[in-house]
Length: 372
Image (cartoon, rainbow, N blue to C red; front, side, top):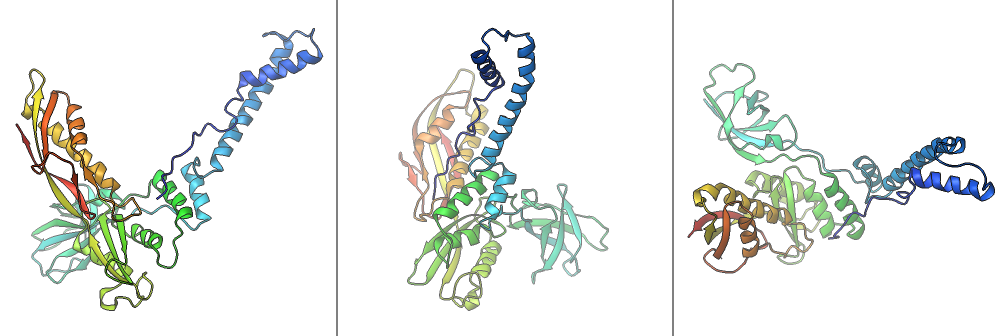
């Protein structure tokens, strides 16, 4: 994958300041008329000042125009227009899908609307076990709710309880500008065509609920492709999301027949990334007046932030065999940045004093933190 770094957006006209334009104009007059008064406050100086100001505005406009002409410095609006020339648009925001449990289970709730935490869901599908699929009416991450009491918008006779019990397909926000810019440049280096790895990466990341993906070509013989995914909330995907991606790519009853996005002859298997629990042990030295109870919440948050950073890197590399590495040095550095912690020693991960290289389909999850 290309490591794209935007250039300095200073442009080619940043040195065309009001002062510089006015200086050049006065210098040209002095070349031809050395005895003319061009000092500040003179008639000529006053006449040239508006001219210099207008030219400075023109150069500023040219600078903006120049930056908007290139994809690496264009604003979002013009980047979208440039990418449209390659048939690309930012990935749209998607609606979260959750599972709701209701009692009694015999009623028909299709089309009924419910509110949880100020967010409205509508029932759209009834499952054989009596639960319902609920679609968030607002696209984006606001609907990523896995548990909560549902309040019906309109009165429902005989309804006793209503609750969200599982997030099936997480919603996502519209693709951010820099992620879209990177994807645009990647499209030049890795042409998506004919069911190659680049095309699978494009197909899968565009699917609702998918936040990251790895593609394993020829993983189990010729014609086989394995796709591993994370949800758009960067958590392991639900079975529903895995099944949805599988159906879109290569429906299981008709594997290899080309009835999904995958070409004829491609047998696709969709799996989900899993969490690898990391237990952390260390000896801390505290500043005067501090103890573990006082810094525990900050320490746990610092470790979770580090693990979240690692997770955001999962699937970015084109080589699916790249593994995340949980490093002791990174954990110690983040803990030492907490007010109240003076020193740290004897750090181990899962009982060993060394870094942990995770599996290709693993993301880290905080386990037990033992402080000596």
